[in-house]
Length: 154
Ligand code: CTP
Ligand code: ZN
Image (cartoon, rainbow, N blue to C red; front, side, top):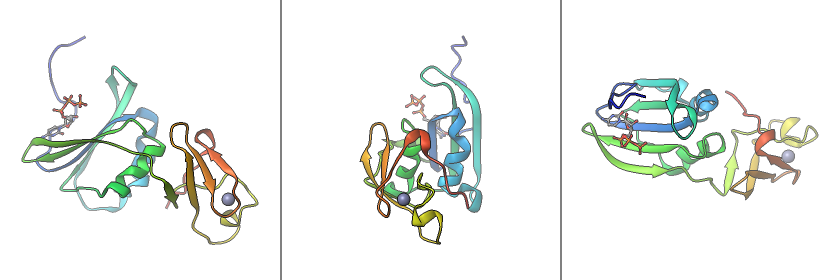
């Protein structure tokens, strides 16, 4: 193990660093935040060594400061992600992601008969269990659990 404190992805001057993303959730986070659709400079690292997670991913978005309800959506796939707000090369603030009370869009309802899977209706869930993630559909009342979560891409 190296004791060198060397950045695996270059530092940014201003913006948001999303750290401690599980390696397998990198592309889900990119999709949830719509990072594929914004003009900002984005750097990321995948499969980086992390004591806690084994392998982690990190995303650095220059000149972007997310609203809480925007960023909290990633808690579904990266519950232990840490946000670092960077101003003038310094870490100005650190935040944890929080599981929101309600999830609108992003996730598909697990019930194939649900209206949201058969008509153009945006999905809407109440988060019944924030620790293990249980999403109760507002339309069919069926529960979608963490293992059953499928993302709506687009
Ligand atoms: N970072 C960055 N650009 C900067 C400053 C920090 O990209 N100008 C990144 C670092 O690479 C790191 C994260 O922001 O991934 C947090 O920085 P820091 O708090 O200095 O690192 P750690 O103490 O390792 O963070 P933690 O243990 O809280 O994850
Ligand atoms: Zn449903």
